[in-house]
Length: 78
Image 1: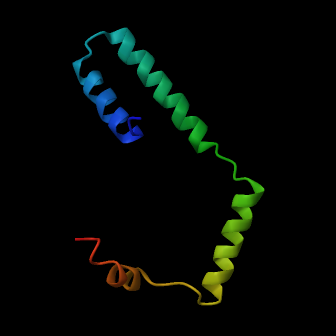
Image 2: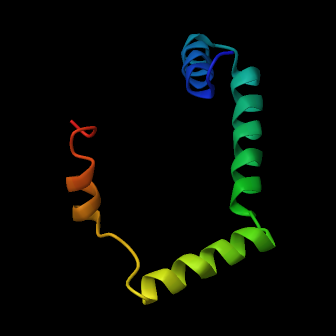
Image 3: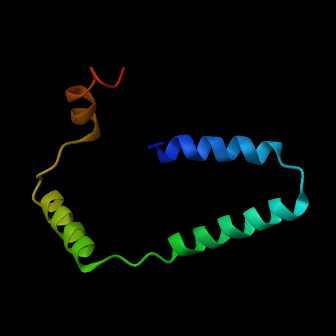
C-alpha cells in the first residue's frame, strides 16, 4: 500500500502538469471544503479527557522539557 505522503507527492506532481482551468478550480474547491471540515473539528469526550489528563500532568511537573527530549533522542535526530 502506498503511504499517504507518497500519494500527496504524486498528486502535487500531477497538479503541476494540469493546464485545464476547470479542473484546477474544482480541486481548489475540494481542498477548501476539506480545510473547512478540519477547522470545524470537535474533539470527542475521549480526546477532551486526554487533554485534561495531560494538563494535570504538566501542572504536577510530570513532563520533560524540549531540551530533555532532544538530549534523550539526539542519536535519532541527526
